[in-house]
Length: 539
Ligand SMILES: Cc1cc2nc3c(=O)[nH]c(=O)nc-3n(C[C@H](O)[C@H](O)[C@H](O)COP(=O)(O)O)c2cc1C
Image 1 (cartoon, helix red, strand yellow):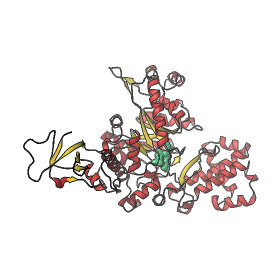
Image 2 (cartoon, rainbow, N blue to C red):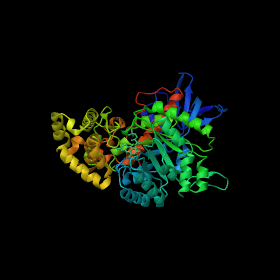
Image 3 (cartoon, protein in one colour):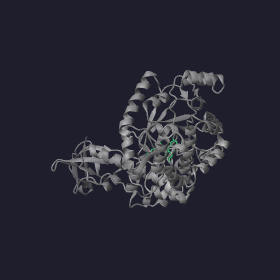
């Protein structure tokens, strides 16, 4: 490849350590070979020549054969550049939606300002509250042309609510939506995705609305990777929600062009490891692109258990066009949970998580991943689900067990809980009460769901008398993050701003990627080479 000529004091043939990598990331880096010691090293300064100099070396110079030159590497270049171009962001980094405004307007705004993409946590909030938050986000980010999105959660029991949220998104011009919990497609999601489709003069398709489809199973992924079903498109045209042209274009393109591959994560999760899931979805994507003869790229993002720069770098190395992070963002000062919750999260270690009963699909036995350390919620949620599975009514529960849950879990009688449940559903969904009056098992489910539902409100409100019952959705990423930041400024919960978390994850991922590039040349590596201690970074 030529030679490097320069001052020998600028060469380094020792095993490459973390500091050397840190200095190399944003610089062109020469890799050289020393024939006498047969070692590979780095050389800075000096000159790179295609041939040996004819008139010899100057005093103090040394010449080494050049093995390669690495160009500078920036965090902005991680992932697929097409992601940044399509979505108008600086980094291929997404803040995942976190329900009930835990993924708050503030969090989305701060991510937007640093050039990442934040998704507002709209699930579990009324359309009015969602609208207020989106107005706040849009007035902070839209004037500067910065991007953002919001969550659209499938609500099988409340199709009207799903429609209302889509209407709101279309009215406010929300361009990016993270779609979750879809086992099958609904007219609402198709309406959103296909609204505004048009063709440019050269015939290429222009999309107005982007769906980021969150999936952890192949069969769900294939719904989003295929064109919208003809039946739903016809229905939407008949209802005048889509034009014939939008429907015609939709029939030839994938419903979603950004897929979030969700591995073992906080909250709802199939607990699949990213290394197994990602390649499987990638081959499905590649097959469907051929089958439908698409001429548009479909970007795959990696989510789940990303809590350190090493895991983020590994996700990009798997082929992720972008990464999506949830759990560790919940510990950011801008997230919607209380200070007491953040302090608990900051103490978590990798194994401090457990699966427990979910409020939304309690009867089906669906579980969510939550924080275990410092709270009894996981155990208590499972205890209630166990009673629900074993008995057909509250009255069947043995007296001592009933007394135990009334004292320790509910802190009131089940009769009192039922009265509150009736009050709540009389206002929101009276059919539930009618159903419970006919089915004692359903009545038991509603009573038990009072606890599961309340336990996710307490950590948001910071109800300290209920800290032992906090339901904090949390994946193993939290423990990995806490270990990484131990001893640094990010160990302190008050210093965990979303921008410092995200910037350090990205800068650290660039560091790890650079170290791996150097490793492929055969350079010897010191043990600490992948260490990236967090530092205060500028946007
Ligand atoms: C507190 C919390 C709430 C969440 N709420 C939602 C939600 O409402 N909708 C959704 O699509 N995903 C939700 N998620 C999942 C995240 O958007 C993201 O996909 C996931 O957290 C990524 O994995 P990680 O937790 O390992 O980072 C939530 C996650 C957490 C931790």
